[in-house]
Every structure is written in structure tokens, then in C-alpha cells.
Length: 251
Picture 1: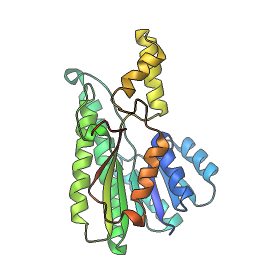
Picture 2: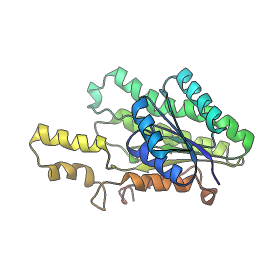
Picture 3: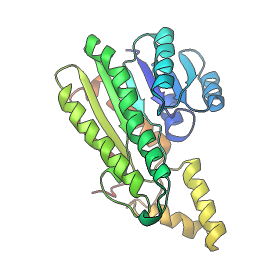
Picture 4: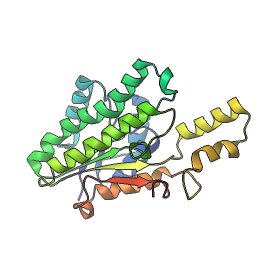
């Protein structure tokens, strides 16, 4: 059955892969992000049953307008995928509070705003799927990304609490927790390590793959497939879960 799915952070990386997968499954997709160019390009590539609208998840007014535009295009939002996020790095004692606050605004408050806006119609209709793209950093700590870890732990807590609130309402709420994923961001980080340290690309890559027992980066399509399943009727009894996609790294 075709549903209306709204994906934040839809223009690149994991968000783009999720958008493509849900569209491939026959769902109408609304693509939300701060930059309109990649959203429009993706919408054109997908064709019918796709709609691009820009909006900053940290701005309640902007995101309300984006949700209203989405509803006007495809009706009530039935599937929400919160994928927008950021992950600044710094030693804890050198974190700038503005960076800390921005991380919380995007990773936590953005999920709050979008979920609250989507939930009303889900409750009215007695059906809904909320999938939060968290991280293995919501399950354990990592050095030099304490703000990111704190924000993703918060997202997982929100996921579990809301799942219990709406468990009898036909709505599921889950978190997908990827390890290091093969995205432009990770590839850029690898290039940065090479340029700054003189290490080879293979040596820099090991920094990201050594935490994965499979010895590799996770593919964006693997994350997207898990999200697609969680949005299906087959996953109706799966809620409040943290689904790790990390090659067994958190086993």
C-alpha cells in the first residue's frame, strides 16, 4: 500500500538513499532539507510521487510551512524519517557552546519538532511509522564527539518513550543506529586524515572500519533497506527498538 513519507536530510547520503528506497517501494515522498538544489535534483530524478521542499528542522516556523506544503501535495504524513543531523568533532574541554547548542538543535530538537508535527494526523488516522536515524553513538560513547553522542542518546531515549506512549495507536517508533557509513562525509574525513597526517588512504580507512567486525563501511542502501522494512506492515510489532547496522560492532 502506498503511503506518504516525509524524509528530513533527504538531499544527500543516507537520507537520499532512504528517499530512493521508499519511492521505489511505491510511496509518495516529500524531500526536506536546508538546501533546495540537491532536493530538487533528487525529485527530478525520482519523477512522479516526489516533492521537494526546503526547511531547517531547527526552525519551527520553517518546518511547519514545509509540513503544510507536504500535506497539500500528498495528504497526511504517514511515514516520518528523521535523518537530518550533524556531527562536529572537538575535545570536550574545547567544545564551543554554540557548536554544542547547534548539535542539540539539529539532532534532538529537530526530531522533536518534526515528530510532534507529524504525530497529530497519525493519531487521528490510527496508523504511522516514525524512524529516527540515530547512530551506534546512541548506544555507546566515542571520543571527541561528546555532543554528538549526547544528542543521539537523547534521540534514542525519545524514541523509546514515544513508542510506549503510542503503542496501542497503530504507530511504531524506532531508531536505526548505523556504524560508519560510506558517504561523502566519511570519504572527506578520510581524505582529511591523509592530508593532515601523511597516512595512506588504506591506513586512514582503517580508522573507520576497525570498529566493524566485517572490516568495512556500511552501505547507504543497507541502512535504507532497514528503514523501508520498519515502515512496512510486516514490522507492525517492532517498536521502541534500536536497530544497529554496524557489522556486529555493538554485539
